[in-house]
Length: 588
Image (cartoon, rainbow, N blue to C red):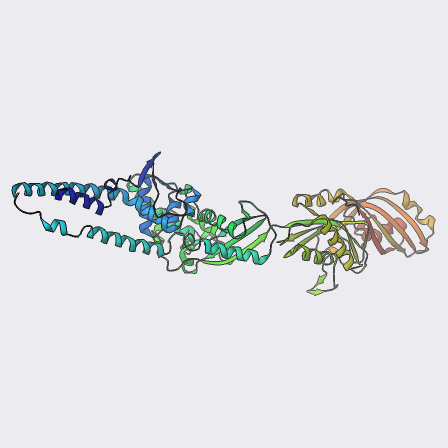
């Protein structure tokens, strides 16, 4: 039969949760200098342990008491193990509390053991002095572990309170806004947009005040550690963005049917968070670091994330603490997901176009806010292209441009289009051929050839050495003085004629005033009648042909008026060829 003291010690050990009495090892396992904790309540990934060191305990204790969530505590402790952030936050919180209470429990258990031993000795002495008296029934019948049960109940209540309060550092982003529910919402938005993609990159836009709050938390930790002669490196901390991505990437990928969520992709899903309650957190920086906050046209607020970060780098700790609470004040609400935006990087298509109309501008012709022509080359091409790629918009460019009354014949003029946010990014060769036919069938004013998808880098080839390229034209010329074929024959012998062309009057409103030298490489004439002839020219790209013919009031020298010694004018002009070897031709 066990003695009273032996039985009491056994019951006391059980009541205090003594691991030795139960034959189990202490939950804190020392491995390679780390106190590694694995809480028995964690069921999501039992193999993931928190790689926390002994020196992290004051940081953990300080941050938890300041209102930081479990995941933010890991961030400030520079834990870069991604799986640690994917665990349920309530499990991580329990492990952190076990981690910081381990030393205190060990000390209390030692104290309890010493006290128990002293009590046992006194009981043994009492038994030996009065062997005839029965055992003390109060000791045996007294409820065991009442104080411990109360402490455990209080700990549960405290745990629930800590789980429910909004984190002072991340404003709830790494709490309820970072889980399967949010992943479902993101995936539903992506599916509704009907993009075609193989991979996706997840990005997040955070309120600028998070930088201020994080800085406050660091100063709060530094004050504690400075007293203990310990150092903490802020640069090694995990950013909220990174932690958010580590948690959400796998969840979003699962909801999208296994699509890979990677760090670089042509398709991006961006989540923006706002927190109006704490917008004023940044305002004190405007007075302490005024040069960091300058108004810009495109920004609704001067308190951009970059400006706030710059200000926090300049401000001293003393000045910061004078204007801002340390630790930050407890918020009453979490951040709000403002929107989920999907964006596909631009894709580029190129080809050549012919223009057969003398009343069709290359781009929409708007003068003083009033549209002059009902359509344009770029619009006739863009409409079917945007429909096929389901793009939000486009940018059109070409190798030079012709006037509204000038036709583009021959093999056409090279052009390229940047398609903005295309929902469809790939078309097969057959589909591209069908798209080209759709464009050509939509109007008899234009025709497209060699339509193809190109890279952004290839776009530059269209503009490379543009002024060194040559272009061929045919002009119908009128002369005031009657002429014979012999009067114009000498023009055929002129080679590499250098022109000085002052910016034409008709384009002076959109081009800088300058004198540009251009070269007419060769000319050929075809006599029609006493006042008309055709002039074929091969010139350096950028030559103003109309101004060469009529002289532009002497702004182009020499000109055809000077050469023929009579007034001349141009009636019609056709571009016969643009000698740019791009894009590659596609056999019909």
